[in-house]
Length: 125
Length: 153
Image (cartoon, rainbow over all chains, first blue to last red; front, side):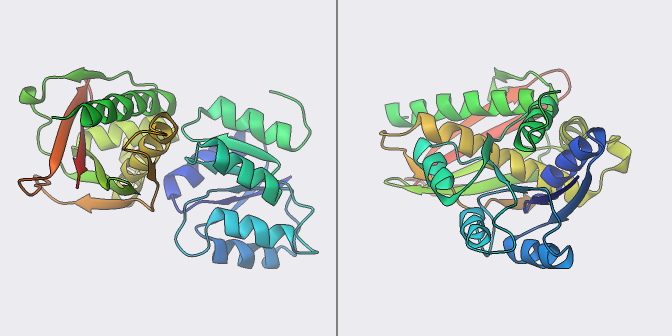
């Protein structure tokens, strides 16, 4: 299993990397939307899950999500938003754009691992 | 201090306590600011735009930053880079603002999030102009000291 974490915070990517290691998943990362598209190109879309922050410089998470969902190559990859945007209208907007799961920061390590497994249809911890 | 600012302080203070506990396991309690947060060296800040514009800042000393980010990432504090400490404290500001956002819906302080930024240096002080409404809340336990500041302008 390979996950892509897209977040402008290196510390959040480090926490998610820790979760990926426990779950024995490979993790690749990007610090913004442009880099995420490059990484996806590099792996030719061979990514099983994308964890996506919302508020990032450049392309924000919602814009990237819409771009991914309109792409023939990447639309099949499930996307989980991992964000501080907690308002219901934000969540509805993301769901309409095609997000599979939504995780609100702050979160514990156990919560993020559980959500990752749910996203991948792998049951719970 | 107006009632609105008091409500803002309560919501953001509760969000700070929840964020710190969830991400690091540390419980912090509100304390008298007169006891002082000490020499602040890293601040994570965020502009919150709405009917009223706000600046939120979370400031800590070096030791607090090391402890919080060490527990947050599961990394020995000696292995943490200075950039990681700055990034982590800034992410706390982001999470606190995000957590309180829903609770402040339909109040004069309803706001949109922006991209957070970092202020670094020795003896950091953020000073506002005279007519700016300002609130300082100090949180601590035996090991960490955190200053939460809000400016409404």
